[in-house]
Image 1: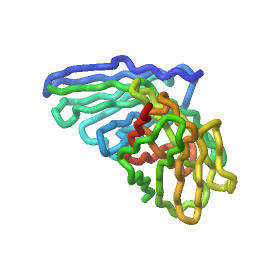
Image 2: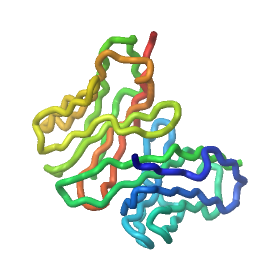
Image 3: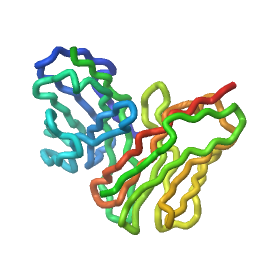
Length: 116
Length: 115
């Protein structure tokens, strides 16, 4: 089975801090994703990466950056945490595929981040 | 732009009964994939069922089945013989294909199962 591991289940940080959320997958997947989950808004894509050192902005990238130095690890960085970034953060991974063969995304357990 | 709409924020069903969760989407693509994910209180998102748009036959996985109406852009999830373990948040998601496998999610439906 695919295993996607997020480094923290709960995290509490202060406004203005630089925050790192780590995600590791063990299935050699090319694609990795960071989502933010808020009540009533579903999952919104922050950033994704389709290869080492390659990244693209999702729908809500403002205030976030990412790093992918190794294929198995994808980090989300809050450059200067603000209270409106208090949320649940989910990491996911999947294989790359052609236009006619898609695979589902596999998710980690999520990190509930509180910014005080 | 593609969108996914789940119009039922909350649903409730009696144990052993059947419940249907609604999902509609908007797209101009002809080939795409649709998914239902389940997120129990443990928070791990689990794939429930998947449907390819070019397949007319509705997908089925044990007690879970879909009613896929391509012309109406509707993708509802039916849960038969509901069990207490089915209580969760359910998300409908759309994937238009391509190498990145990006998903667009609906806002979710919280399903309660009454004993």
